[in-house]
Image (cartoon, rainbow, N blue to C red; front, side):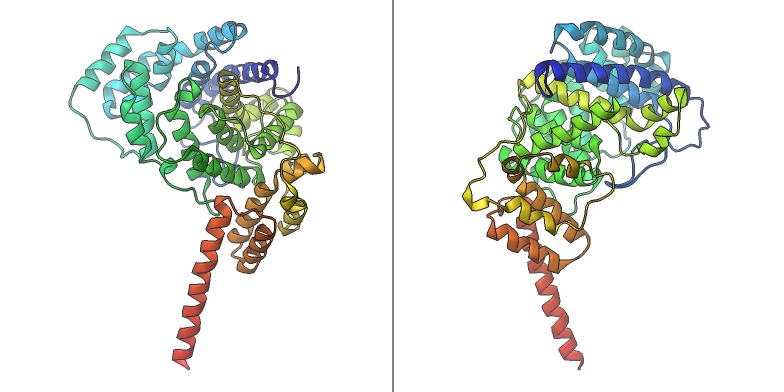
Length: 434
């Protein structure tokens, strides 16, 4: 078994299933914590570290149920593990409290019943919940929280899973999401990048079926995913790396060299720790704990990153896409030396950025294939710092080594134009006031 082959991918799905099972148990414990404790285990920004916060049982159960459906039928050897996890989820997903929540919050039907929808698709029926859902969906729509386009897409996706109906309208809804327009490669936020990954997941039914028609060329969509990978890798946000990576198998496209490298970074961390460290994970804090306290720390900070890596690996198996190492020797003479020229443009390595260590392990020809990724990181850092001179220096290297194809380069050129216009306007104002 080698990293990225079918057996290895199945092993990682099995690890995610085990993590989901343990997370449910801790989420049940966390229900007894004080109600005024904030309940969101993700950090506030790409590079931010969040405090260790409780797990939300409804969220953990819903994501575990999604993992089961994602892993369903990709390998017969997983069937016992899937059944074991499902058995633990059913009492929570189909509890009396779920029915009560549906009755009291009809506008949130697919938020409340998401776990049930996924479990039902795997054969775990509950006629009482289905009857209540049918009554709600057949009635007049009830107001509720306004949904974003991606949330609308999710609700429609869950409706199709539950009803078995047509997916024709999913394409129309997808055209209203962030996938329909270019990603901001220089300043996209964590929230924007997660929305991108979720839209891809819903449109492809987690890779279980051919995705609905994309609103843009698939190459442009994957260029955006690659730009997002640059941001996520540089922030050491492996949770987001995993979600961005599933764009390739869920859209049934082989991984690019940058995506294959990101998968390597992800698996190095997973194999080191035995789980995928989440955005809130701090190694020193982990090492200072023992026994049950360490286990709860791991689950509260890293269950989600490990589970979504299970989504990724299941999608890779289903699509029969192996995340091969970055291609070697295809950069061509015009780009020879591009990676080594891009590296000095970075303003030093950031603490915990595992991609730098992984990059150093590559042969020169393989590293050369990652020059566009390095250029995106450099441009994003320069733009984030408001350093227009460094943006210009990056673009000079990009032109010299023909690294001009990515969205970060195009958007940086536009940034320079806007900065030049602003500077000219400032000079004119200065002259007029003299």
